[in-house]
Structure formats: structure tokens, C-alpha cells
Length: 196
Image 1: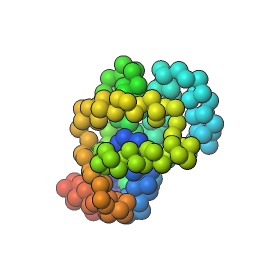
Image 2 (image 1 turned 120 degrees about the vertical axis):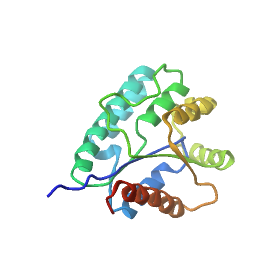
Image 3 (image 1 turned 90 degrees about the vertical axis):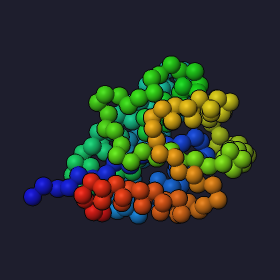
Image 4 (image 1 turned 60 degrees about the vertical axis):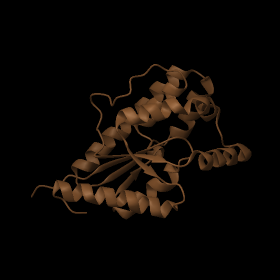
């Protein structure tokens, strides 16, 4: 008996749009797997080392490598019938690095798994800036986030080129946003003839 293919869901957006909070909630609602950067045990150390170099092309290629690993891991799970939720996929890497001046093309690499449901999580800019200020006060706003911020219009333009589906989280709890996205995932499954 053939196993019904799972759904590949990605969640991208500007810093402080709520991705990290919402992604695991979506995965729980659709009985899916939340793939995180932590799937590579040495990821935090490697990330810190690459970030510390200050070399933009090196950082871009390192994040692209991480996305390729997410892609292949997600592919295996989806083919086995699991729904997979990934926070910050190729669009995030490309949009962020374009905003910082790297000349990368706004497209999925040829061999990458393209999402079935690709969400752009947005929030009103005043709300986002308040969250950014909170990160700065806590000392968690990185050099790279600070470098992207002056040109987030370019990040947003790149997200639009990817054709991501915008979801506005302004004035909604993380749970409400997650439920709305889970409904989109369920609708996709019904349209494809497979039920969650």
C-alpha cells in the first residue's frame, strides 16, 4: 500500500515576525515534524564561528548548506507521509543576505525541495520594531540582524519574488496565527486528496 505524501510547510519572514514561536505550534496542530537548525548537533558552534568571521559570502553559503540539509531531511520525511514544518528556509537566507548586499538570485536551487505551503509571516512594522528593541535590550540582537535592518525593504521584495503567502500576525496570539496556517495546510491536503 502506497503511503500518502506528506506536506512540506515553510515559514519565512523578517526578524521578529514570530517565526520561532509559531513554527512548533503549527507542527503540533498538523501532527507534523518541526525541523530546526538544531538537527545538526554542532550547528550552534559552527554558526558562531562562521558569524564571527564577518565574511558575508561565507555566511551566505553556510546557511545555504544548512538549508540543503533541511531540504533533504524534509524530502525523506514527506515521502514517508509526514508533514514537515521548517522555519527560515531558502527565502529567508536569500532575502537576508540580499538586504546585506550579497548578489544572490531569489530562487530555490534546482535540487531543493520546494514547499507545498510557503508562508510569509508578517507583523505591523511598529510591533516588529518594538520586538527588535526588546532583543537589543536583552543583548540578543546580533550584528547580522542589525546589518539587515536598514534594508528590510529589499528582504520584503525578495520574499514577494518567491511568491510566499502572506499571513499577518498583528493583533493575534501565536496560537491564533498557528491555527490559521494549520487551516491552510489542511486545505492543501484536502485539495490534494489526502486528509490529515
